[in-house]
Length: 85
Image (cartoon, rainbow, N blue to C red; front, side):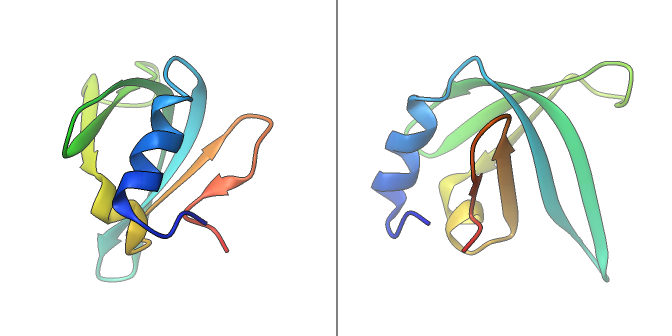
């Protein structure tokens, strides 16, 4: 697992355009699971374009701190999960 926000950002920049599965803490013991493509990275957040068949909205954004604190776990196809130990 990446240890700093900078390392998380760098590892995500190398994965732009790749398919992923996202697991996010939805609060009150809910886990949200979505799939899509990593679209863009910005200085503080990253954007995921979701698969339209499964979701009511097109895009979601999360901060790199969400990955660091394990609120969000990203699993790229054919790779280890980012945010997983």
